[in-house]
Length: 170
Image (tube, rainbow, N blue to C red; front, side, top):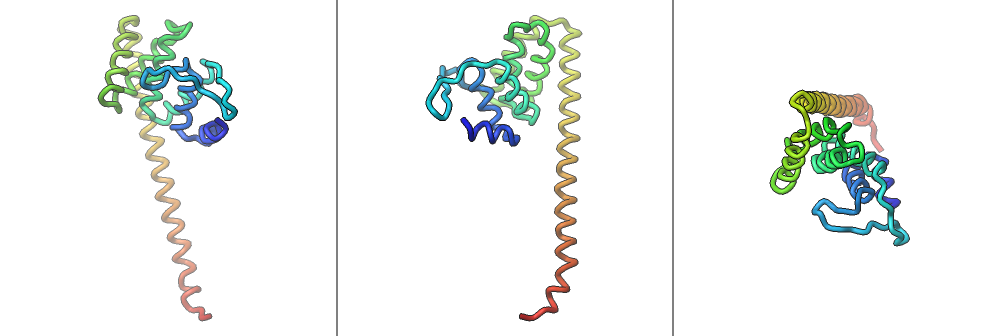
């Protein structure tokens, strides 16, 4: 558990997702009952707030299965009516990247929550999902540009030192 927490804290989306699942209602991603334990073999209590925290971290990194699980928590929680728009938004985002069983699960969740929403709420959720996608693409583009810039700077620095090293003899 310590390694999983450390990896999650360092931004590992898979670790964040796994922690979210563990802290959730003890049901894994294939609807199998699990009994998560810590490093000493003691059971970990279900903790909805921690589950949502870690699932949100993974979902915000674009992990579609985390988006689905987060949407399910929003849709089924004690304050579900207050969170239908968030649930719908995350179901929409998840559906854009999933296939097979996982897509069907996200689609079923989407349909279930939409049946409880007004057309205006659904439109709001769709607009939020579109905005999130746009921001995610912009963030990815900035990260890619930074990586390319860093690589170019590194190459330039190596090039500046190469002539000085080439004239030396040992």
